[in-house]
Length: 72
Length: 363
Image (cartoon, rainbow over all chains, first blue to last red; front, side, top):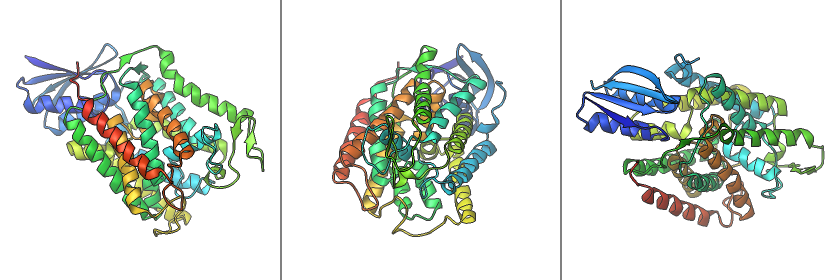
């Protein structure tokens, strides 16, 4: 099972706050983060990497991106 | 062109900080005011003056750098397929935050960019400003930790995102139709300063090219001075801070080379020595930037990539500059304006009100 964090349409630093919250308090091994700007994509990936998580896949979805993270 | 964004790497952000750090003092050498090679707040205030939104005769000039920032960012966003028209995330709040951010910045006399350029030029008063900025951003992070958010944007018509870039283009056209006439304080509909900082400027074309270049690079690198401090305080993430520090180091070195480094507190260009209000003015600005999600430069780069809410923040700053000078809120080298202190207190109260009350859960 994977948890989805929908951060589309949210401005800095909300996508990162939501991703870090999920990494720290969630239970599922995989986390899918949906974002809609390149900036949010880079910020979420950087934040996840800093927590020792692995970025498995980044793919375009709609007008944004779907980032799949596995907890480290 | 969707590959890896090299500008968003560590060396990328260091490079962009370095470019801005070198170009700003060079613009000063080419004619811009002291320790004001680039100042987003001051330059928007000069634009407000040129348009007659305030009548402070010493700060009236359409600054091509500002026009370049927005248009350069837009060009980058289109080339790299990142132009995304969006709007609807608390627009009126962004406008109000922009207005008070400007008022706070004009009590200190500079935006975060100028705060570090002042420091790099030897102005010790900038230390108080930077401490205030950090304090204001820290307060902002407390709100963010407690659920403060501006709500979601939604995708909109391409035209919506074009509005601010088109307004900027309009300013440029006005400058070309009504160019500065030597010795005259007005040309057509535009006001031009005859003395003071507004009379000091680099050549139009050079300023525009530098603005376009910085706008382009900043869009790619996501350079943000407020984010630099916020991310460090909030997440211990120092990516943007490294870019900000790079700006300071390279501006300092460039000032040394150009003979523009003059250490001291008194008699610094376009600065005053009222430490408390240098600190408090930037506390207000920092808090407003943190609540709005970006420093004044970043708000312009976001506007260029289609963010209609960031565009409202920019317009809020320009209107705020009008209020700041019409109401005697802005400081001068003599010290704070007659109502500057009251405005800082009101601004802080408004920001705290916004921070406490906009904590609705994100749908």
